[in-house]
Amino acid sequence: MEDAAPTFRNLVTSFTDFLTVAIHTILYERSIYPHTSFLSARKYNFAVRQSRHPKVCEWINDAVAAVEAELLKGGVERVAVMIYDKSNKPVERYVFDVSRFPTLSTSDLDIPLERRGADGQGVSVLPRVDMEEQFRATMSKLTGCNSMLAAIPPGCTFTIAIELKGDGEAPTAHPQPWMPVQPQLSKDGAGDPIVTTKPVRAVAAGEMVFETWIEQVKTGGGTG
Image (cartoon, rainbow, N blue to C red; front, top):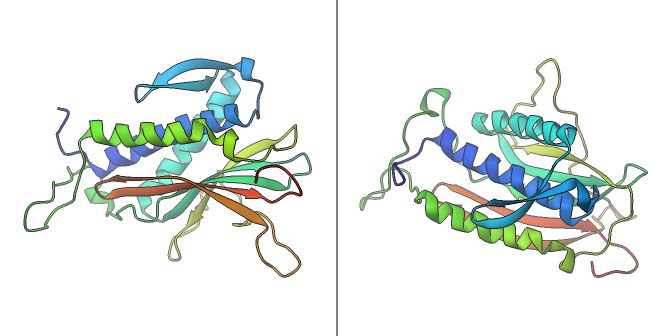
């Protein structure tokens, strides 16, 4: 039923579905792989690109599944798509701030979220169609990100990173899907980040609220 109250697991899955599409879009827009290796597709009634390389798709799906597992634990502050140059230095970071996601106990993950009543009780949930409209608007901004970013060097690679909340427990299961990384891109001699920040969009779907922005290392030229 379209307007039935979803569970928190449903909301997290909606976000990770969006994250998957966003990752493919970023890889296409920033030419991490040749444009000819992407297919045309539609998501949220919007034209998107999807890598057709099986290994790339498998890696992205596995990474997003690992992100989803941590989101369900409620300890994730931010999810980031990191882009590195050939010398393994980070040059861009696409940040999804999920710090305002609710934190639920494991026993409550599959209980339908209540709609907020006049007394303010319950959890505010938007109908799926409204949520997808916001996802579509965010995808539109990501699709045009090249116009507001400086060029990146050829031969860049990417990975997915998560930042945990202050009281979050680091994922230390074996085999280890996560490796520790620096949370910031780069610093100058004074210790200040050498980055420019470009806002993308905020999504507010009831209690599932997140913001998206792009961080890019400053260079001597370009539009950044």
